Length: 394
Image 1: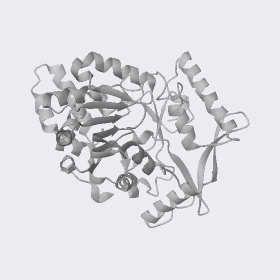
Image 2: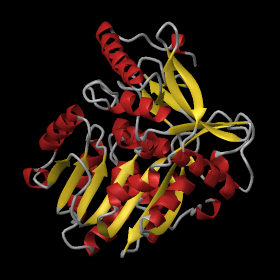
Image 3: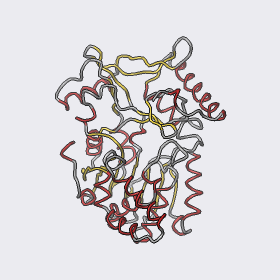
Image 4: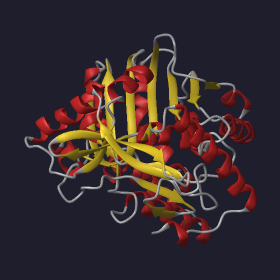
C-alpha cells in the first residue's frame, strides 16, 4: 500500500513527525551524509522523546497501529503463566522479566493468573525504554492489581546487572530490533544506508559492507549452502548474539521465551523473498515505506529464528523448543481456557472470549504467523513445546 493512501494524521502528529524527521536528518549530516539503515530505524523507533516507542502516541489496540496478542484479552498471558509456572516454582526468589511492557495488558493478565495459581514471582520486572509507556503501565497495574501484587512490580532502565533466576519473556520484541539491510552486488556484500537527496528527502544508498556485516552475510550463505543471487536484498541482525548475551547473560537459573513472527533461515532467505521482510504498521495498515511519517509508524522486520537459536545456544542456554503460537497455546492451558469461555453465561462476553481465542490460534490470524521459541539453563522448559514441535525446520 502506498503512503498516499494511508490515513492522514492530525496536525499535532504531523508536527511531531517533522521534528523527528529533522532530528534524523541532522544525524545524517553529522555522519558526513549517510547513516546505516539500522541507525535510521533505531532513531525512528527509539530517539528520546521523539521515536515511535519513546513518544506518547497510542500504539497498541484498536485505536493504535497494531494489535498484539496480549491486547486481545487475557488468554495469551494466562497460557504463558501455565508454560513458565514450573520454572517459577523451581527456582528460588524468581524474577519474571518482560522486555517492553506495551500497554501493560500482558503484565496485568499474567500477574492475576499467577496469583490464582500461587506462582507469583517474587519480582515482576519490566524493561521499558519509553518513559511515557512506563507511566501508562504503572497507572494501569496500580489500578488493576491488589496492592500486595503491584508491590512486586518494578521497572528497569536496562538489563539486570547482577545474577538472577526466573524467566525472561519477550513478545514482539525481536522484530523491532534495528535491523541491518544488505544487498549483493556482483558477488560482493553491500549495506543499505540512508542519505539525503538534493531536495533533502531521505534516500537509500548502498555502500560496501564492513567486516561485521560482510562476515554475517557470508555465514548465512555458508549455512544455506549457496551464495545469495545478484541483487538479493534482505535483513539480518549481526548484533543478535551480543543482544541475547546482554539481556539474558546473567540469568543463571531459569528460562527465556520469545514469541514473534518470522521464519527458519531457509524460509527467511527464499529466492522469491528478494527484497527482504521489512514491514511498517500505521493505523492497522501494513506497507513498505520506512520513510513515511517517522515517529508515527512502527518499522519491523521478520525474525530469522535459526539465528535466534544460534545466539541463544552461543550465550550458554539449552534450546528448549520451537513451535507455532497456536501449538504453544494448546500445550499450555488453551483447552481449559476454551472450556471456561464456553461456560460463560453472558452471550456477548462468551462470543468475545471465543473470538479472542480464534484470533490467537487460527492459521489465517496469529496462530501460524507467530512462533514461540524457548531456552533454558538448569531447568526444563521442554514441556511447553510438547505439541507441534517445529525444531526440525531450523
